[in-house]
Length: 72
Image 1 (tube, one colour):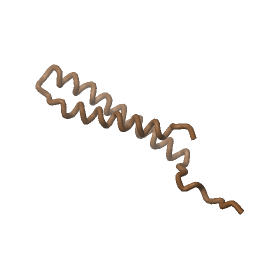
Image 2 (cartoon, one colour):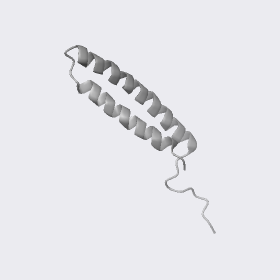
Image 3 (cartoon, helix red, strand yellow):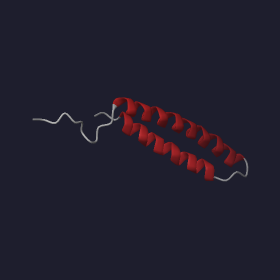
Image 4 (spheres, helix red, strand yellow):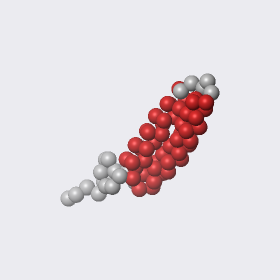
């Protein structure tokens, strides 16, 4: 007899939607911060630390989003 229990790696659709939405919002904000602070770093004496960290956050959010919406 088969077990009615779900697979251990199963993530409900609603949870994946929430993860994708959060990754979109955070990634979009980080992308804006990256662009603005990169321009400020070019034009002023602002260091490149903030734009680089924001770019890393953006890339991580893109990867999280892609894994959340990947076809099953």
